[in-house]
Length: 284
Image 1 (cartoon, rainbow, N blue to C red):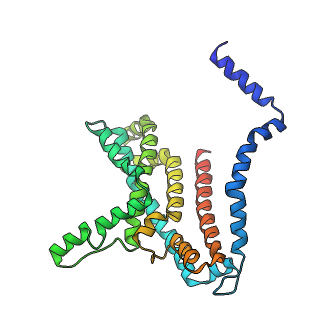
Image 2: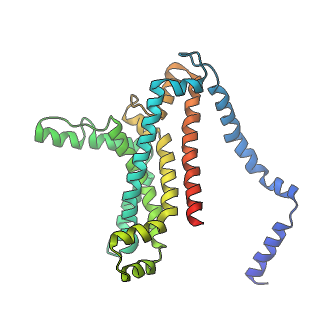
Image 3: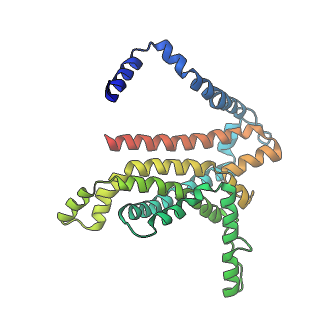
């Protein structure tokens, strides 16, 4: 019997399995999902309904009415959007270049660009401090030039740099692979019809990369929404949701603000669902 016959027989056997056997096969995954996501998340939803210690209202009502919580949510969303857009632009350019060019040291360059994948968020935060902290490279250069220390590390700008550094390697890996699969004949046909490089990029390359751009952007946005290690390293006074949640839990034991966690998760989930919907619409 050939390999193809064996695979066909396996598919027929799988289709012939009764529903009860499929249920038993999926039971371990269902138990794992329930124990490590469904039950904890249900408990989180319940805790968020408790009264907040400050306002004596439900945690969800407190989240949408208190300015400090709304500011943290707005800062986190805008920061995540900015990181996602800049990451996609840089990664798309680098990905297309590396996919189309063959030169000595290309593999080494790609390895260097993706090397930060091995760094956790805390290490990325320390790198930002070494670059733009009070004793960092930027401060030393500005001190020698204008006799003033320029520091960016302990602000939303520094956090943007850290998130960008954390997100770029993952986006580059995905977009290099996606760029290598593009049909170059479509670009040659457009060029032969007199299309400019800008039109080729916008009408041929970008639609070809659209599924990869959407999925990468959604993951980048969701990761930036909940990234904690980098933000914690750069300073606990930054008004972003992960640090706000951490401060409320550890400093004030205000468990009603678990609603913040639910809101943050809901925003990230909506971003992932929107990206999936757009990808399916584009494929159709």
